[in-house]
Each structure stands twice: as C-alpha cells, then as structure tokens.
Image 1: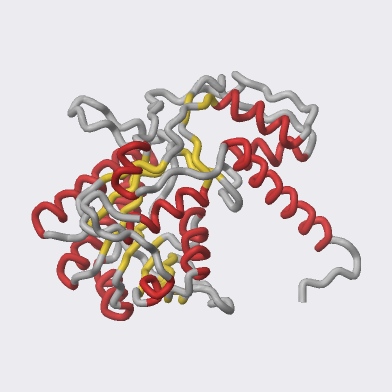
Image 2: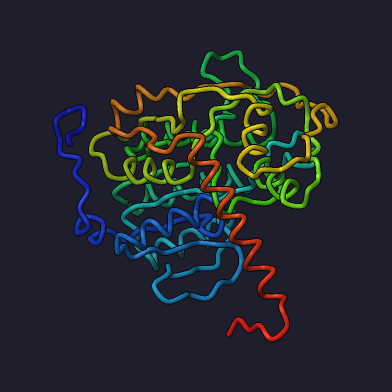
Length: 326
C-alpha cells in the first residue's frame, strides 16, 4: 500500500513500537477505544485525563492534567516527549444553551491552542486533531450550530494556521456520527437501546434529521492511518460512511435488532435548529489515507446492541446473592 505520492503506507508493529504516543481525552468514548487499539499494537501510550486513574495491567500510562493550563501542557511534553499526539479531549455536546459557550471555548479551543503552541516549540512527529462534522463549511457564510461547533471550527482553524505558519505537523480528522460500545448513555443510540431493554418507548424528536453514521472501530482505524501516512500534514480528512440515514430509520433498525415491542415516540421532543446534515467526503479520504469503512450500519448496530446486552447481563449477575467481583 502506498500514499498518493508513492510513499509506503504499510503499518508494521515495529513502526508503532518505535513511537511514544500521547492521547488526550483518553477516558472518553473515542479515547478509550484508541488506547485499546494502540495497546494491541504494543505501543507505549500515555493517556491524559482530568481525573486520577490507576494503570491496569497492559493498559496505558495515565497522567492527570488540565490542558486548559498552559504550564500543565508544557510539563506533560517535557515528561513524556511524545512523538505522536492524538488530541481528543474537550466538552462534547451539541446542546445550544448559552451556558455552554465558555466551558466549550476553554475545554476545546484553549486546550488545543496550548497543545499546538507547546508542540510547535518542542517538536513532534505528528499531531492528529479530532475535528467534527458540526464544523461549518468553509464558504464564509455558514454559522456554527452550537458552542461546541464554534469551538471545534476555531480549533481546526488554529491547527491549519500552525501548520501553514510554523510547520507544525498537524492532520485534522473530522469524525461523523460515531457510535459503538461504551458510548455515553446520554447519546442517542445508548438512550434508545436502554429504553427498549426496559420495554419502554424511547421519547424522541421528529426523527427527520439525517446523519452519516460510522462505527467506532472504523473511526479508530482512520485515526491510526492519519498518524502514519507520510507527507499529509495540513490535510483535513472525513471519517464517515458517505451515506445519510435519518434518525427515524436508525431507531427503527434498533427496534428490530433488540426485538422490542415498545414503539418509539417520535415528535415528543423538539428538533434542534440549524442542525447540519452533512455527508463525509469518503473518496477524498480514501485518496489521502487509503481508508474506507468496513463495518456496515446493520453489523455495527448489532455489535453495539450485543455489547449493551452483555453489560446488562453482567450488571444483573453482580447483584445476585453470593456474587463477588474479586
């Protein structure tokens, strides 16, 4: 396999083992999956989280830090000396409340600028910034749909600026509607699945919004490719399926997979305004990374439901008399 300019893209275990990798937001949905995939490749992973975490056997090396603190970011770089940085941390919420403006600004934009500034000064092999489908298009007229979208948009802009002006090796990866095992329970798919498991009808908006849904394992493979493909600094790539599916259709498929008789209640909740319906540019991504999704929506939903079913079973077993986790 070769890159667009003819350079080899072959991923070898030895090439990853030679890198020291830092993952911010490592305790989150994407971060935890990324750390697991890197660990399977034998990589030395330094995982950053706001909260204190103990290292598990075979797991990453945990660091407690607040990336909104410039001095804390500098100390991390001085201690870890990372070759590759995956920047995934920040408040993830598309809620449009005014109260989220400052928290989103600081957790997403301030942390990104701090990290880029230190990386530009101290040097590294590659920085992969997690972008978002919520970022407005680059037509100059689009308006961000939420504080989260605005902060992500600005963060990507700073990433491109740092590459253009200072040669910082940034690649921006825009993730589309990622789902899969371990996602926060407040997100759409976990919320619907848990309701159906309990025999309750999930309360939803109209279900007319369309999104490009992508399974988490495919997204992680895209991140890994973005960290390795040579001479693509300054590039922005999309990780999605290239196909739009309405929320209604997605929920109806979940009902079939779960086998529930509880009908979804569409139209109970209000629709969000200014919610973009965007499809990933998968052909451009394939040309850049030679990456494309492998998991179909049907298979991804089945795997996700099975994971939640196993979690529910484990939870019930742990509550049985005489059961011990030790």
